[in-house]
Length: 516
Ligand SMILES: [Zn+2]
Image (cartoon, rainbow, N blue to C red; front, side):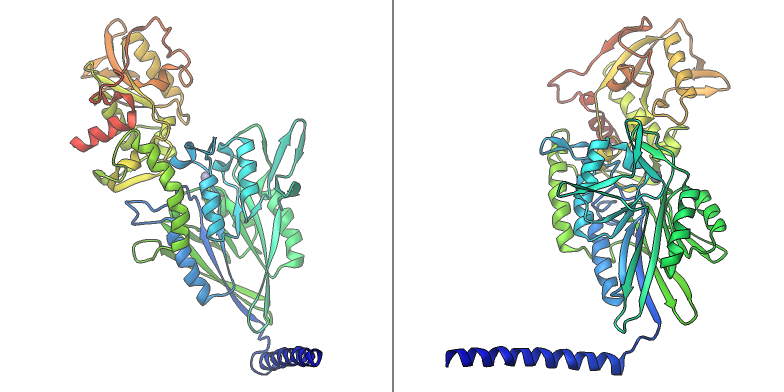
């Protein structure tokens, strides 16, 4: 009896399931048969250094991107999210320690996993972090990494970069075909390749020619894709030249530059969004199999206060922000206090700060000079200490100064001979493009001469210069070290003196900006 009952129930369920399946099949074949047309959406970000929002949380932030993407997916169930390089570095959180190691992009991979990013290209900044840490980040990631023109150098040999999953090495693909299928069964095979700029020479990376490597991939992808798209990290000039040479590519989603840009070259679109997810691009790719033709329509969407915050992503971001806040509070009690309002954007981009005096660099140098306890006449810092590679605008929070100068350090008042000062400034001029290039105040360059207060620097006179302690280690300017004969005295900050802001350059800048 029991057996019969069971058997009956079992077959009834089977029957119901079978009924279900048949009716669904019938529904598909009667009402929606493959129309040969498909639409997919791609959300593009590039150059994202911060997991949280900027300008006091009002713009950008990956919680906002995630919220927006979930809504986009409602409208376009066939969609993907991509990041065109530069995301592991620089960031303030990345410089801090967690579970014994420097964080170095772990926070970013954690959040990108949470928001279900699909694929990244390598940017130059991915290679800022040591090889071992980069490997950990790749292994931790749940998304794809395309490495079209990159090889990893191991001793005398070269191999593709890899991801280690459960002890097994899987080489990263040079390109990949992503397949989509819509409700009526129309499919789309999207062939994607990448290209990474050769601008960050490090021992473990061999950059192959991006154009020729991508060309090889395109030839292969053509056989197995309906549409071809690139996820690149090149200069806009390189992207445009590439588009011109490859009219078969529908869309190039690029990065590296930090301002949004959209250009058409023949039938190829080249798009870059604003850095730090201040904006994202939404590309709608439509494909018609009967015409074998695809179209791209793109919209730049600003990630501002109109967009909500995803709750899950916010939780992950908060976990990492708490580590950051605890570290900052050791130097300044209120990380989110507004300390200054910048009417004009303060330029902390490396393309500015490493080549000429920038308003951000000069303001920092003034702060350093202002913090002096020995009436410094001149202040400077190495442009390499400015790591934000972005602009600061509007309300500036204390935490922004830590973002700009993640490594901090003390300020020393250094009395030196004019001859040494001149040597330093000449070295700085020769270091354009490098971190040793100085941002300064109290000096003016006129022709080949250096002036202070309207007078040419006298090699025999003495000058009091406030500078960051890092510079005195001789790592950027080799002869600028405590042993140099041109240095007459060094005045270090007084330990335990709460009013001596020289103990941390960020504190000195915050206190100075508050007075303006
Ligand atoms: Zn870049």
